[in-house]
Image (cartoon, rainbow, N blue to C red; front, side):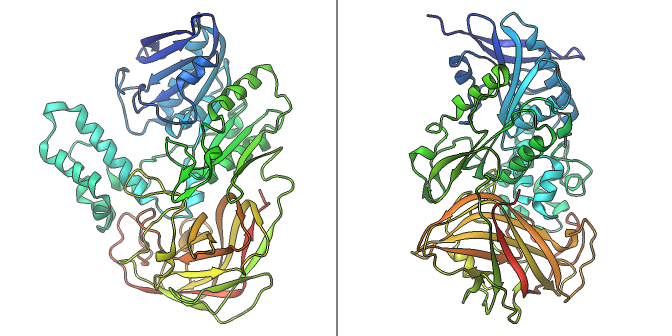
Length: 550
């Protein structure tokens, strides 16, 4: 029995005559087609979410295409060309639908960049598109909301470094050896470059001829991420992410937005215990979640194909939400997110809390104790460790012990009582905090942690707000006066087991995942070195809200 055929270098014409090339896997007879559009090389897809060979084995055709100007595809590549990507995606969908190996039904799939172009193409409403399956995606507005005004510095510099390496590689033997050495040094030790101020003058990215200037990204002249109109997407969407994905909150929020805008369509959500990596295994950080937690054991590729079939044959009766409950280490299903039976919890912060020392408390009732504080030194920021970070530079995501972070003199830890019984937190996590600084600006980093009986502190979810952006960019920061903050820590599904404690870490830096706020109120691009500032946490109304709210 013939499973199918593989054809390399298949040409797809765009509306402007440019030819994009891809590899096609197709069954012997016409079938629905799944399209992956990638700038990373069509033979380099490494995500465990869905591979082209899974599609062929499941009876689907699969076209993996190099995007414009990349590898074998024609046209001019630009590092930021989202409008062009949207049009090219539309054209590829409609071309595929007209081919004799396709039955006229087309889907889009892929992780991060591939998923973003799926959203962009779907928003143009190709007539033959039947559904999309974007994994681990975000847009400009969603990311701005998630970062609270702070800058994902490590992500930005890491991305620029690899784009610069690609740019030099395309020059072949004509590449300037001095520039190549500069980029290689940046990739090897990105933190050294990220500590230089002002950031816009980073000499490691002063590359004559390179089409992107870091200053243009920092001041918003060039947007590294696009936006799209969810209301324009009129097909079912399968959203896939992991609880330690840097874009977990944006992905879940995108699912909720589609269900709100198009309730008559079946939009599905899958969330595992994974980070933003290609290998979606059961080993994350220092935790083994059990073999059932891996994408392979959860049948993630097959679930994609089942979703595509439901788009064609009808929704069926299965629950549209599949999520992994960490701590219980089991998969659960629900009709919606958060699940209807999710319970909420409110824990009030109270002192005394000593930075780097005695923890404060999380209590069921407010206790207006005297404020506690710490000194933030922008020259000695709290180092990024674990949690929802990207591994593009030298950071490691996932559940890694934060004990050394909690022992720093610029970090406050709050702990609830040791639990007598298992407690599930499922849904959105928020922190309402009364906070003051004597600087012109400051950040608050909040991390929900699980304190184990052996003393380890494992991150669960996290959020950040920059005071000068708490009500939009340019918000005044009254020096020394308490202000009310609401910090969104995103979504999670975590069982805090009996014998564990619910914990909260507060600091004013998380470097280099975010830039170190220098405290002077200057723009990120041009800010010079700052001076230490005093921060204080005020009690009574400061409360951690756990779970159940969408």
